[in-house]
Length: 212
Image 1 (spheres, rainbow, N blue to C red):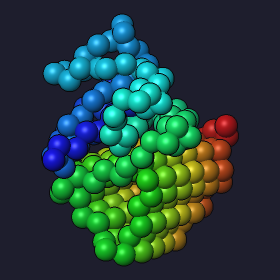
Image 2: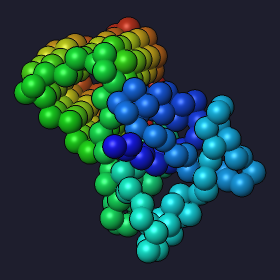
Image 3: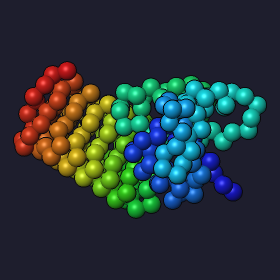
Image 4: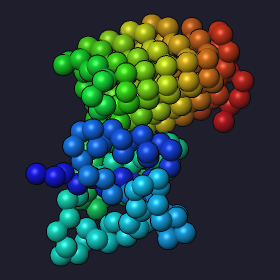
């Protein structure tokens, strides 16, 4: 039986998520708020806006209500997921077939795990996260809701990252480090000390360069 999946957000990020979904056996249907000025993404049609999708789900039309939000911006992704949850959609988790996930890891709804990523024993990943290509989340680490761990970023054991953070491409976070909420860790950084809430940190070792 064909499984239908609505993808909210038609961007480069959405393309990769659609590819993952199709490898997992889904037929994908895109929705994007740029519709109708934007009607296609590559060979996929865009069927309407997020509001159109919600309206469709509220009619008598039979709709498979599995959905994933493919928006890179943490704040907007949170808003869309919460809106869809309020409208009784089933926010699913997608895991690429080549990702390595411990049987003891916990991954919440709405998270997408990309190719080659690893999430090890007793790690916990929150709602609506992005664990991007070849990222590593080691044992006992905790990732807050709506956080993005970028490609090739590596979190050692026992790391905690707060909600709505961005851990940049190729970054390394040493064991037992705590990163607060709403933080941006610049690409290629090495984090060796705890990082407070609401800051941008960059460098090797990473230092706070901006307080938001």
